[in-house]
Length: 151
Length: 358
Image 1 (cartoon, helix red, strand yellow):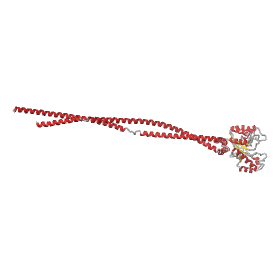
Image 2 (cartoon, chains in turn cyan, brown):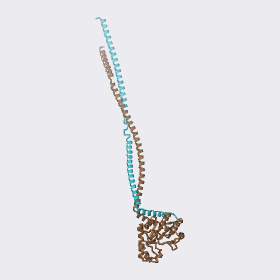
Image 3 (cartoon, helix red, strand yellow):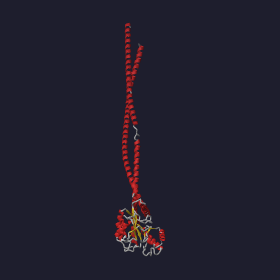
Image 4 (tube, chains in turn yellow, green):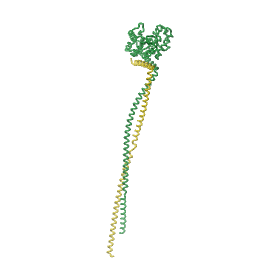
């Protein structure tokens, strides 16, 4: 082989190597670029999702905090007051019932006593002495009126 | 060059691998997991919010119910308290009524004892008034209008007149003094005596027989007969009325009686039998032989009494003229301020039956 051919072959070889080199550099740069691009996009994607997740969690925590703030026993005082009031009313009703019963007993007692008074006043001897009593009482009242006057 | 190329090739390969890895990690990024998780969180958040709303709503409803129940309980409580107050008042009133009725029953059960107790109190009050009059501490005047010898057929008319004027009088009674024209059976006379008592009048002792004109029974047969006549009348009045007399009036007056029997013996008998005795301060002479008409008896009464603050009139309830005098004199004397009262043994007049000048 001649030197020209040899030089051409060497030149060709260098060109090929250069091209290969350039291609490799290209591939490297491209892959690095794309790799970084994917990496960035992945990170952003992760960041966005995690942010959304955190926000959702925060919203849940906030909702739970709001739920916990609601005191289911807040009406306990009022319930107790209502129970007390009802107890008082029931006790008062019971007392009223007892009083009604006592009133009934008193009415019976009064009827019995009235009957007894009527029976006694109808008795001849009692009626006689009662008349004497009332007459003397009338006379004594007149005397007392004179005694009490400054005359 | 070869070395550079190999280095470049290695770097390129590494670059490709790096790109492939990052591409894989990008395309295999678990976005669905995140989405699912976020969705779960949002769902749970909505549930929690719903639970919170439900709880708040429940509490608000319950609070409203409690408020209404409290209001209802308050109204009902007020109504029941009003009812209790009403019942309290009624019970108090009923108790008062029952107590008053029981008092009435007790009073009626012991009516006799109560009447005797009242008589004592009444006599005491009269005595107080008499003492005030005697001491000049009262302008009041008292007239003791007494009737001897009854009861008779006229007595009921005197009782009616006395009731008409609100006057109380004294009867010195004698069972056998009047063998009158009327039915003087025991039943009739007992009825008149009881009517005298029911009228609030005083019933006293004038002996059972009053046969003073011969003093055969009362005085003539001695002190024992006198005692018997007093005791018999005492028993007769007590049996008829339930009240024992305590004042004795001598038939014909004490002067007449003391002339017939020893004064000390008669007074001893009276004292033993629990009696005091009395005469009078004013005689209307309706028992005189002349037997005056009603006007004369009336005029005598009005004249005799005019100077007396405490007067005791002697009359007789068997005389219709006396009834006329009584009916006219009583209202006029009441206008002059006289109080017509029954005579009791506690009276100041016992032992002092003299004229009291005003």
